[in-house]
Structure formats: C-alpha cells, structure tokens
Length: 296
Image (cartoon, rainbow, N blue to C red):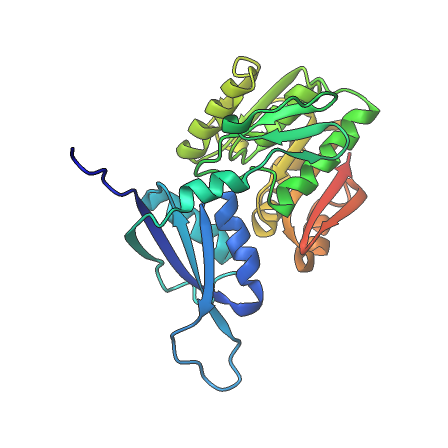
C-alpha cells in the first residue's frame, strides 16, 4: 500500500514593528492563513531603533499575486518594519495545522441576529441568521476584530430599516455582502480587484443560497454607476482616505457609509477625509481597530 503524501503548506515571513505584530498576524489570518507565529527578529538592530518581530504566516494555498496584495496592505498600514524587504516564501510539510485550525473555527454569534458558520460544522441557528463562510485567500471570516465590528454596525442599521441598494467595496470573502443580502437588502453589488477573493466570495454566496442575488464584479469603484442606500468598505485606513471622493459620490442623500479596517491612530484622519459632506454618527472600537458610521 502506497504511503500517503504529506500535505505541503506555504510559509510567508515578514518583519514587522514588534508592537504591531499581532495586528499584522490578524490581517494574514483574515486572508486565509491557517496559523501565525511571532518570533524575535534575527536582524541586527541599531541602538534606539524600534524593536522588530518576525511574523511567520502559514497558508494551505497562496500565489505570488496574493502575497504581494497582502504585503502591500501591510505596507500601507505601516505594519512592515522595512517595506523594501521582500517576504520570504518557502514550502513546508504539514505538522497537523489544517485539522487543528478547522477544529478551532467553531460557529460563533455576532450581535443579536447573526451566526457565522463554517460549512463543515453547520448547526441549527434558531433565531439567528446563518452566514456560512469557507475561509480562503480572502479577507473576512468574522473572527478578525475589524470584520466583527463592521458586521455589528451593519446589523444595527438593518434593525432600524431596510435598504434597497447596497454596495460592498473590497468584498474579500463576501461576508459583508452576504450578510447585507440576508439581512434584507434588495439589491447588492460586491466588488474586489482580487480575482481569488471574488472566487471565494462567489463560493460563499453559493453556500448561503444568495449567489443569484449578489452581483460580484472585478470592476473598479470608479466604474460603478448609480447611488446606494448603504455602502460598506472594510479595507485599510490609507486606502479609504484615497478613495473618499469616489465613495462619497456613490452614496445617495440620507444613505449610510460604514468604513472599517482602520487602526485607532488613523480614525480621525479617515473621518476627516469624508467631511463635510458626510456626518459621523458613530465610532466603534474593537481592540485596536475602528469602524466609522457616516451618513450623507
């Protein structure tokens, strides 16, 4: 009998400022890392220079394009100790992470009405709305504080009323678009420039029975037409500042905009980029992450 081939995983290693290592690990995890390990930096550090950590992120499957996408996000957020250093990528045999990770991904409630559920462990959710998510190389299982926070804000908005047209910018795993549709939005558009993210989002939409109710697209925000009652964008603070004019243009009078993926130190700068046209209604804190609710 031929022995089973061991599973092989990809290790991606970057150097981060020590105080931001946990947050950088959270971003890798949200993009599908099965696990992360933080160690001391092996580089020589000059006296007085900030401490560095080496962050090892382990993936079941990831390509060069996705690694570049993640490290670009980390660089923009100031989470790389040296943005000129390329990540170290290597292949390693599986020491049992995949099974351990799936065991750790238990169904868990979010807010009063939602329940995020992995497809391999579906449970009766009773009075909660199930959001079935198969994690892939795309942002959003609900575990990351940023995704959790924006889902809470969206759920609270739907408790006050329904929305005819919703737009999710940088949809990742599709979790926000799926939740928005299942909470009651009539028409949902979800966009992402990453083809792997869109593939994962479409798969998750199919698992939730809403594949035909959400329009997924690789179109850039600049090509989206019309105005929306609700827009969600869980990206990063620097990206949200850059796209502020385009996001404001897509929001109808009276509409709501939920921004997330924002570090605490970025929150005021992000909010300022959306004034004075939009009024800030709420600033939600989840650990070091912030979600901002605005209204035109």
